[in-house]
Amino acid sequence: MRNFESEQSQKKYQNIISQTIEASLIDLYGINGYKSIIQAMMKECDKSEKEITGNYKHFSSMIQRIFGKIGDSKS
Image (cartoon, rainbow, N blue to C red; front, side, top):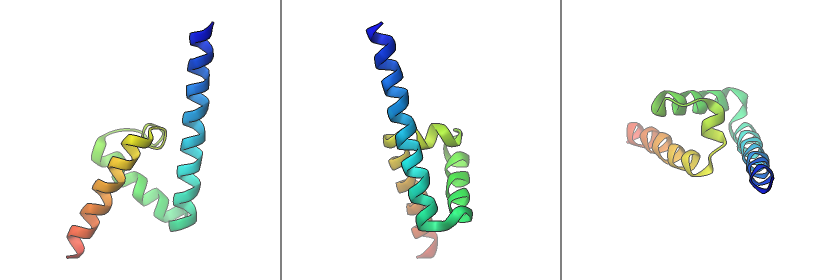
């Protein structure tokens, strides 16, 4: 039973992270900017939107890769 509760707690935590990331990106870049960023991430790592936004370490790495590429192309 303890493993089940721990697993449920982990899923709840991942959902909170996902919602926070989504809301922050939409606030910063608008819905179209958010969709564009997520699509670039999905293409780059071949993962779904929820897989990206639900895993903070993966999300952080993808942000660095995506925004790094944007910065490189502007130089």
